[in-house]
Length: 563
Ligand code: ADP
Image 1: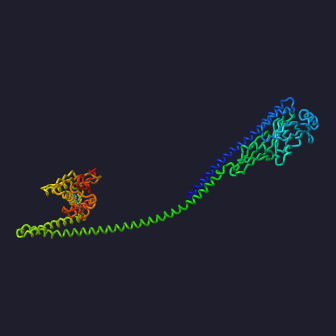
Image 2: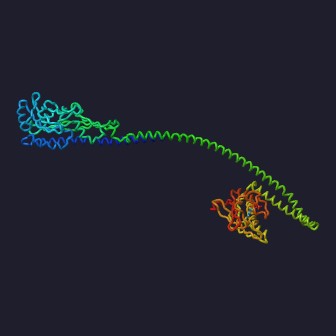
Image 3: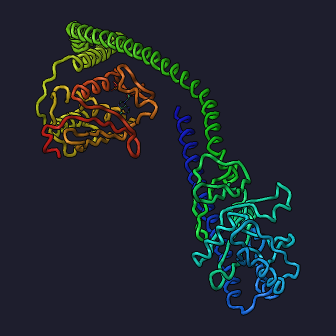
């Protein structure tokens, strides 16, 4: 639809432009035609006035003088010019005298032919301008249009143009070549002396006057205006183009008016211009229909794709819901297991303490009664109870870290960590570890869980060092945002391979290299639980120069102060 509309609009636009330019072109052409006709009439007027003025000043007009005076007209190439003549008037009684006089001055063979009674008007000198033989002595009184123009010119003393009529000399031409003509008459000298008269043929005049200007592009009709409009001649080079309005132009000729009806022909516009808008419309329609196919196909495909997306989204949502349910169930199971492990660990503590107590008694008091082998068995029993004790304590701590109620208070982390560090130094008095504690903030947390966090981190940092190498641990903190701080525990121990770092926080996970060291694989799981219960997170990276760097975030006690 958009394409069709655009094509129609373009077609209309092109039509407007072409039509607009056709109108402008035609206006211009009509103006040139009008000017050409006006200019040619003016040339007739000037030429005739010149001859009349020259005749008027001659003392004695004869054939030779008239031939001299009218000679320039043969070169002037006035369009449609047929003859130029000198005409005199004569009453019937004067006819013989007039004939005698002009036989003497002009053609000795002159024979005037008066027609009817009254005044007669004889052409006594003539110069043909159209190549036909001259005809003298004809009485213009016999032709009303000729008589009228002579009388009018004489009465007004001004040049006058006659009505259109058929020249008598045209009678010699074939019917198809005969035309309507005009007489342009200029009175000479005293009223009644005579007239210089030029005859011009209408069709020839029009053809020669406007032929060049109109070419094939304009249809022109020449009419004379009077009591009725008479068409004198026309110029029809091609079919008229009805889409552009024609023009009517009135031309002033001496004492009369002519009218030109000018209309554009189909040749005015190049065929490409005429057909351009139609071509645009057709091309637009064709392309619209061609485009309609892929557009329809893509519309259906898009709908199908949209339905697929809706279906896939629904399936995905169902999948996510199912996963959430499963995760929820797993979490419940885990909680149950942790709780169960906690209960078991708690209940095993008492019997284990009994076993351990009796083992200690036996080692202290009955050692002398036992063989070497039996003392070895007792030592292993003792070590086993120690390991079991550690496991039970870790299990209990792991269960507690998850389920015990959080009693958060302001805790001076620096004091807490320094205390733990001191305990470690004291426990290894032979090779005391170097534990540097930088300034640590006061945090908002559960003192028991915070202690578990740092006991495990510092314990691991001290424990996982190469044998014989003294442990070196640095603990520092920086603010992280407005309400959290980040505490780092960095050591120079055996380190953790990058690909194993993400797993060390899973319960019962001990990574490569730790076999040589005692442990349950629960310490970092306890730490992660405890940190997460404070709204923080934990991760581990390698330390510069070897070892590990554990980072945890914890809430600071006074968020504003932390700024
Ligand atoms: P464990 O009781 O084995 O120490 P943890 O959960 O505390 O259990 O630690 C899990 C494993 O992570 C350890 O077995 C050890 O392989 C590794 N690990 C923890 N802390 C360190 C450390 N500071 N340096 C090197 N390895 C460590």
